[in-house]
Structure formats: structure tokens, C-alpha cells
Image 1 (cartoon, rainbow, N blue to C red):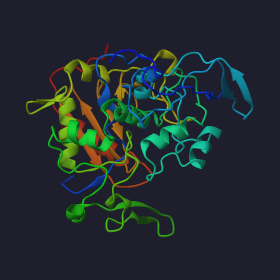
Image 2 (image 1 turned 90 degrees about the vertical axis):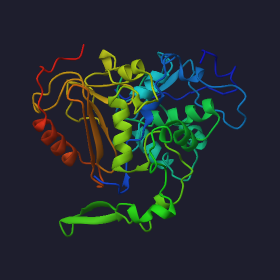
Image 3 (image 1 turned 90 degrees about the horizontal axis):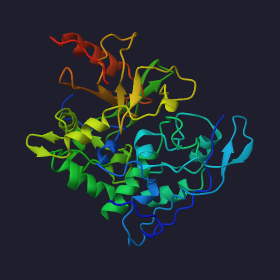
Length: 370
């Protein structure tokens, strides 16, 4: 796609508020989504506003990315005016450096705005989501920080506008169907409810578990209006494995090629600039200097002194219901855990990965990624 401006494409862009702070075939609810799929070969560093197809009435992406001055929110809530350094790019959206947040993992004033506006409302379409997003300031200057965010959901809307179809249809036709992911989608059809797993959470009173999402009454029994680019799919271990195997095989599965080999290689290498490292999931969390982020994945870039079983070059991510996967090109392994527990905990994923890696026999040294 060429670098045409949003205005040439019929899309209004004038973002005025950038802020900165000084097992088995049973269904499993995931939160990681498949947002990394849209890597492509060109234009990742173009401003995000330059990636739309013209003439899509009713599908204008009102991202408002340009302004001479941006509001900057300091740590104690005082508002200041500063010049924006540059516009967010497609690469920023994919690597979580666009300046957005999630509203769920931090308690900044911007996160509170996300919660007040119910940004991840299951009953609001992506077009409405993006329109609401334009009324909320950015948390950081674009490109300066890794901050896990709704950037991948914005990418979902980009896919809708460029393709001219809804994100669920795009996923079905361009990803799930070619990979024979027959049980993956944004809801569970009536004829498959008997295979839908329950989701659990902690029960402080009984010091145990309680069911927080009953399969017979789950909101996932009905299609949502919000087709999230960053989460909200239901799937099975079989389908999840097929998707991960496609990535391990560098973009193809059993003769069907979904992505170019070069695309997967780019997606799975660290894309964060030096100023955005070390990567931190939440403010104040302990950082790991051996982690980076590619175009949709966390990437192990250096050995982990606290976990010798981690392999340089492996890439991974997790989902809200404590689902998770790790793909290791060196060991040729795909490791998946579908815990079905909220809030997110990596305990099962990490323990299972540790056991698998301990059982893998390798004859070559584990070289560092260049």
C-alpha cells in the first residue's frame, strides 16, 4: 500500500491529545488475540494515518494523529502543552509504542479515562471504539516507551478499513479457513457449547476457586459487536497449535503459506528502540533486560539468569484467561497452556514450559540472537 495521506483517503485525522507521564479439543477463552498477523512487507514506519484505502463511506478512522501541540500529563496530574515529536506508525501499533494504554493494568489518569469510557465494551463496534479513543490523550510520546495497549485493537480497525470487511470475517477467510482452524472465532456456536470450558477465578472466602464464566450462560455464546484485534477469541488446543505451528514453520502450514518467511523473521525479532528498553509490562514491575518485543510477540533476546531453561530466540505471549504459548525455533517446539483462570497468572505456562524444555535434547549450543 502506498503512502497516501488520510485526507486523500477520505479519513479525518487530527489527534489533539497526546499525553506523557514524567489440552484437548475443549474451548478455551483466550486474551492474546492474533494481532501480530498484519506485518506485511512495506510501510510499517509510515504514519498510521497513511495506511487506509479511499472511499469507504462509514468506515472513517477518526484517529486524530496530527497536531502542532499535544497535552502532556505529568505524574501528579498537572497538564502541560508540549510539541509532539512525531506521529505514531503502524510499527508503533504492532510493538505497543504508539502511546496508548489498556485501562486494565495501570491506574494512571489516562487509564481511568479508558475505564470511564468503557473502551473495551463488547457491545460497541471497532469504529465506535476508535472514535472514543480520539477523545482520550496518549499516555506517552509515540516511540518512546513500550506500554501494553489497545494498539492492536486499533490495528483491527485498520484491517477493517483496508479490507472493506469486518474483522471477524477477515480472520475467518484469511486465517482460520486456510489453516483449518475450524473451532476458532469470537463466539461459541450453539452446536459446540458442550465443548466450551468454564473459566475460574479465586474464591477468597473458601481459599479455592469459583466459576466466573459459566459455559451455559457465558457472553461468548453470542457474537459480540466489538471484534477485538487484541483478544476475545475462543479456540481449542488443536486450532491454537495449528496457528503456532504455522509460525514455527515460518509462515506456512502443511503446504499452505499464510505469511512470507521474511515477514515471520521480522515479526519475531526485537523491534523496540533502545529508549523503550528494558521492556516493562506495567509501571513499577521488575524488568527483564533479556526481553524485547517484536511485531506482536515478546522475544527473548538474551539469556535469563533466573530461568536457565529460557532459550534465546524464543517468542511468546499470553491471554487474559491465563492462556499462553511459547514458540522456540532453536528447539523446534510449540508449548501451549490453556489455564482458564482470571486474573492472569503465568504459573502453569511457566511450569509446563520449564518441564518441556528440560526434556528437549539439543546437540547445538544456544546461540544469541543478533
